[in-house]
Amino acid sequence: MSIGIPPNGKEKRVKEVISHELTHLIEIIGLNKKDYPKYWSIKQSIMEFTPKTKVCDMLVQCIYKTMDNEINANIAQTYVYLNEFEFMTKSNYLDKLKEYLEWIEYNNILKLNKQNIISKIDEDEIEELNDILLKNGVKTIKIFDIDRWLDFWFNIFQKKSKLYLKNSERIIDEILKKYKHWEGYSTIPNDSSKVIDYSPYISNFKDFKNK
Image (cartoon, rainbow, N blue to C red; front, side):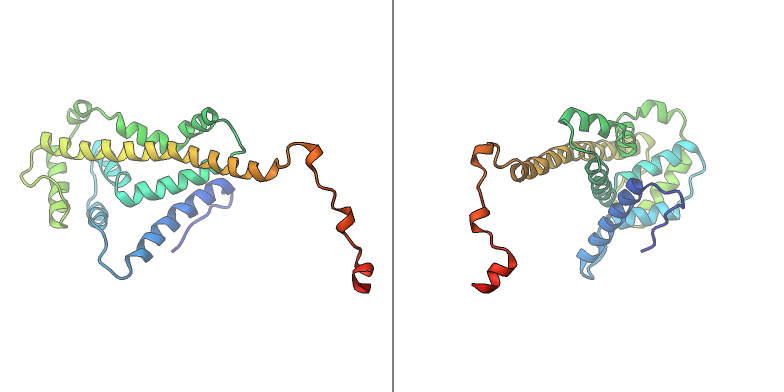
């Protein structure tokens, strides 16, 4: 695995990218020499296809971002992003989450308007993409129709984007739970009258040797 880090790379961003790529690596190791999951066929299809228009390029990006392994890796990356902040309230964490580029992108995918897209689309280009997906064994519509194709893939975009957004919010609860666990160790005893006097039980090293 090769991870590029720019000379002026920010530490937080570097950690996020590493966690993203390590998640992919763990998934591959977990296959234990078994066949690659279905999402690999989607990625292979995207690599074979070259978009000619901006709207098609955007749809290809949506397909890529909503692959199962990308959702998993982006959730891991989001955990690192949120975990780097100091302890805050849940609402403050949520504000930070909504500023995060991954959150913004998935939220934008969720809000895509089919009618706005269909007015700008080149049907022949999408049919070419659909043919490549079929050739590689990806589940898509078999008899091409632009309305049916958009309905099929928009359903996936919506479902997977909601999954990312939901699990990203759950991360906040995990971080708060972590801080609560630490607090239990750092604040006991709360009452100074309960502090134990250890001095009668402590010997200096010389006294200990002579015993």
